[in-house]
Picture 1: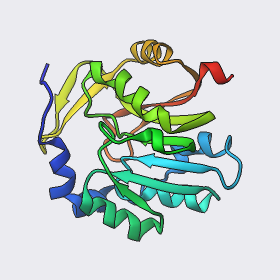
Picture 2 (picture 1 turned 135 degrees about the vertical axis):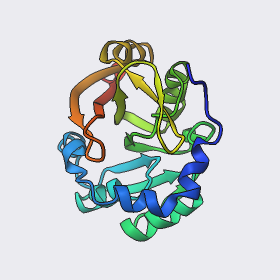
Picture 3 (picture 1 turned 45 degrees about the vertical axis):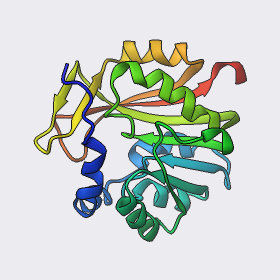
Amino acid sequence: MLGHQQNTPDFYHTHARKYFEQTRAIDSSRFLGVLAHRLPKGATVLDIGCGSGRDLLYLKNSGFCATGLERSAKLAELARKFSGCPVIEGDFTCYDFSSLRCDALVLVGALVHLQKPELGPVLGRISQALEQDGLIYLSLKHGNGQYRNDDGRIFTLWQHEELEKIFTGCGFVNLDFSRNRSAMNPHDTWLGYLLQKQDTM
C-alpha cells in the first residue's frame, strides 16, 4: 500500500490551469447520459469535485439546475467561469451535506484518491444531500491496489465485486454499470455506477 498522500489535493490547486485545459473538452455525455435520461428537466444536481466545470456545463445544457463543489479555490473559479454555474468551495470529506437537498449527485472521478476503508463512510456523508428518491452517479478506476502517477498523485483502484459490496453495505442498489476507456489515458478503465438508496425503491 502506498498510503494516503496528504499533498494530493494541493496538486489541483497548484496545477489548476493545466488540469482545466486537460479535462474541459472531454464529452460528458459518454458517461453522464445514463443519469441525464432518468432526471426530469429542472432537477437539482450537485457535482462534487467538479474540477474544470465540464460536467456542470453539460448538466446545465441538459436542462438541470447544476451546482458544483470543489476544494481547490482556483479550480472553483475556473469552473464558475467555464460553466456559468455556482460552485461551492468545500472539502467533501468534512462538508455538511445534510444542509443540502438534491435530486442527484455526480462524483466523476472525485473519489479516486480515497483509501478503500474511507469510501463507505464518505458515501454515507455525501448521500445526506439526496432527496428521498435521489440518484448518485460515480466513477472509479479499475484495477488492483494503488498506483502513483508521474505527477505524484496516488490513485486507488477497484474491482467491480468489491464496490458492489460497499454499495450494498451503504444501502444503495446499482441501477446501471459501465466500463469505459479513459479519454485521457487509454491504459485506464473507468467503472461507472448509477446508484439509488434501496429503501426508496
